[in-house]
Image (cartoon, rainbow, N blue to C red; front, side, top):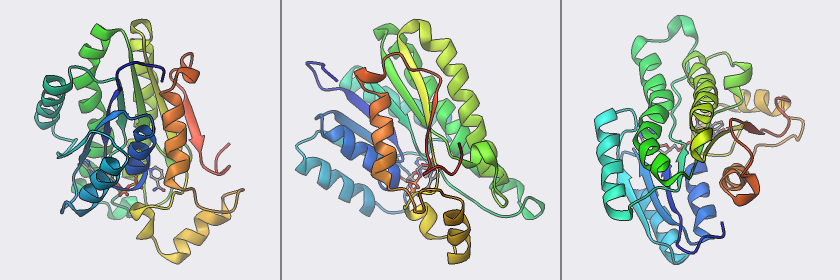
Length: 249
Ligand code: NAD
């Protein structure tokens, strides 16, 4: 974006996978990058920070659980205290806890909804007032193709991602008059740790549904996120961009 001062970009789940690719994409414009993660160890976030430093970018990693309202509030207070504003929020953190609905525990339902959906609410809630004050801001929420078409074994996950789509549209309507755009990106089947755990049978099942005949790469999702935050997308809000190889049209 043609700004004189670097944009301040906050990415949840930025230590690896799609969030990491989003961080690298914003690093190309020399944005200031703060990312959250909740990994058991710091090795992925350290690796991400190393690459970002190599790109000449000011970056920070924080271990926080996006499902905890108070922790998220504190995290953003620190960011506003240090950087004074947030120009871009990418709500990317997400987990799966797959099993058939008839076997799904209450804990697995709650964990996925709390992180994938409430986490988006928590982070958005924390940036909205300051963004309104600036009369500017870009928010991109990462949904999923299964939030649109459903998927056996993912009742919790698909419901959370459908919720993200509705939340995106409502937030977009509430904030459009304030100069803030809110959009979603719904990836299909992307090559990250989240999908690496799937069996070959499940992977083959997905591949058979993808007209482009291959998995997506995190960078291909990051490009859509980045574009939604660019001047080129200034008249786009409340939209869901499908980055899914044609899996859902
Ligand atoms: P990943 O497992 O590679 O990375 C997940 C990231 O989220 C990590 O940085 C992790 O630390 C963070 N995270 C997990 N729980 C968290 C919590 N409670 N608080 C803060 N951070 C937390 O996953 P990915 O494949 O890169 O997925 C990124 C997003 O894209 C997710 O929302 C996922 O649902 C979505 N998505 C992924 C695919 C895919 O095929 N990989 C497809 C559609 C949508």
